[in-house]
Image (cartoon, rainbow over all chains, first blue to last red; front, side):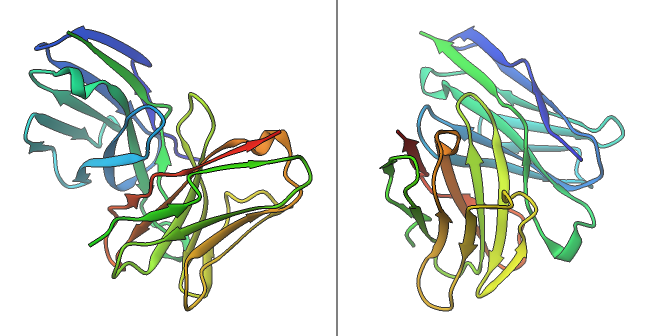
Length: 115
Length: 113
């Protein structure tokens, strides 16, 4: 079964630096999404990139998708202390049975921004 | 437009009791998903429902777990005879009929003593 896997598992950088997180998956997808989760809280949707897109921007976020390598990256530029959180990629399966759109999440990258 | 609502936010049960978790989707969303998250792990899909129908329950344990999304009212995830291994955060998400973007609720943190 497909599985999103993020790396690194943990990342600690100084405020103002850029943070890059990677995600790999195993099967064909319709789209890939990135979510943020603050400690003990729910998930916040960050960005969705479709399988026919290669790059997408949203504010300080930049997401790339390489379907030939089955990988995606999330770049956060000019990081802030408030960006400290866990970041998850999630994929849905192309041709999922019954039209289901269940998401498959990776283990996440725990990002710490040091002031 | 209120977001996805879940209640209770925290639930404590003793082994053998029943746990009922509720989820109200966003207005206009007819698709509901339940996920479970163990500590330090990602979310694992459990079940996908539309009004009065279970579409995909491939992630649901075969026993003790059930879910429904009635015509009126919230979606319910029910865990019978809870065990300590059921302790986790349970998240509900909803989406409109034709959109992959899922909006998540704040979760219910279940603790089984």
